[in-house]
Amino acid sequence: ASRSIASFQEHIVTSHRILALLGAGLSAPSGLPTFRGAGGLWRTYGVKQLATPAAFKEDPALVWTFFLDRIKAAREATPNKAHDALAELARRKDGFLTISMNIDGLSGRVNHPPSRIYYLHGNLFDVKCSRCNIFLRDTDAKAVTEPLHRLSGGISIQALNVPHCPSCEVGLLRPAVFWFTEALDSNTLRSIHSWIEEKPSIDTMLVIGTSAEVYPATAYIEAARKKGARVAVVNIEQEDPGLFALEEQDWYLQGDAAQVIPEMLKPVIGELPS
Ligand code: NAD
Image (tube, rainbow, N blue to C red; front, side, top):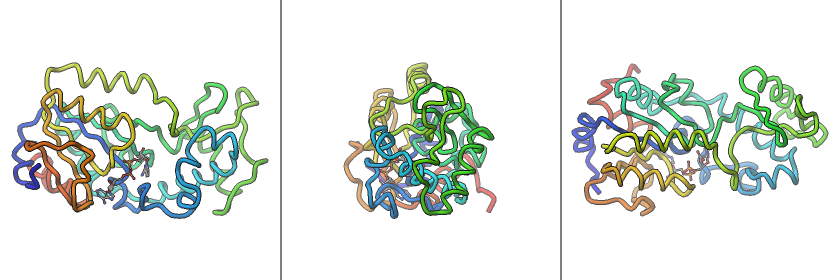
């Protein structure tokens, strides 16, 4: 794979159909930890002990405490130049679709056109019932999480404070993100699939700040490749970890997403306001 930003820039100018897959590394420059960089509860318990339906069943207060911490961090974080650059690309290129695995809401805060991005793993700020189908967003979700933030006082919440569903009154409310072992939203998967299949080719597949270990991330890279896409990986690791099966016509662009993304897209989006 090439390491030349210049040759990528030549290619992106003439690309019409572009697919991007975004991972936690995109928000790392905004101060939000990736799995690997994470501390606190995350390190003590391990993500797989906290972000699963089984963990919630076992200890819903612990899982809520962990997610309240994530919500607070995401709320206090500021989107970075890479979020800006990708939103600008979406405004300039009609054929650009983004699949975000991030749940932090940062792309939304730079007004990434909502019809041009799918949030594969949900949104930290939404709440749903673990039993019935009720789904709360915006002010309704806030009405649930705000009192919890006050109760937790940055420490932890107790079992008796875990909120119950206002509709069925039996189920416990939980963050509306997709946890390990859970099926993703079938409408979202279907829409992404239609976009991939609706035209004979895809020119470029951007893979940004993800270890692409979580299914279906790798499947999207393969699907784009089958449609002829050249793959460009942006990652802070010095060496390509070998997870993307990069080929000669692809790119491995090493560096901090907040610096590399605005640079590689510059011929299309111009200079971002500082
Ligand atoms: P991951 O932690 O497995 O991988 C992150 C990748 O980003 C690594 O390959 C790392 O080398 C790279 N990286 C770190 N800092 C970077 C930077 N500044 N610039 C470019 N690359 C950088 O994350 P994943 O592959 O996204 O999978 C983890 C799952 O958990 C996903 O669903 C993910 O979105 C979710 N998660 C989300 C957030 C968030 O919403 N901010 C944070 C942590 C985890």
